[in-house]
Length: 178
Image (cartoon, rainbow, N blue to C red; front, top):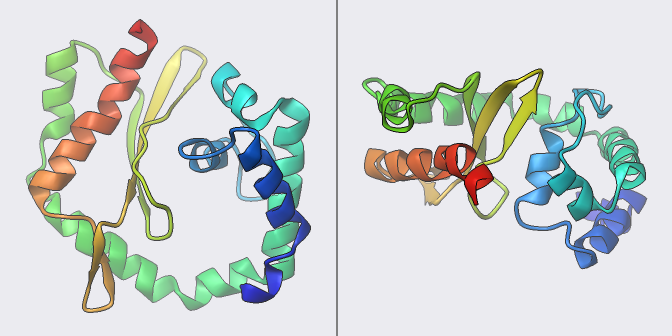
């Protein structure tokens, strides 16, 4: 995607970054858009502050769509389908006897609507956003690869995954209290 370094979407995000749209904000923002990059959920007040308002949120979606079309992202993802499927399958194998969700719910005394792990092979950092709609909260663990092994992304040992699940999902249970 080197040819797209100066694309208007890249330039727009660079400007947003200067205004505080960084770290957790970009990957969290993507959770609010559908596959056509249209907002299908209302941005939280926190995220609106980070992106600089609803107008910027809509423009972000429009430019992400334009970038995806111009750069051929759909074709690229299709060409990498086997890689992504293998990444998900390798990660899922670690979770065969993973009972952390029930343990977390028992610990906090509360259930969330859904628990979602989003594997990221490009992003640095791990984040625990949540989206509440109609009184139901969907929580996320955006988990970045810790490294590679044999050319494949790795997300750590089960102990690392367990820690990140507790830490990132825990944000949704406690952040509103502070």
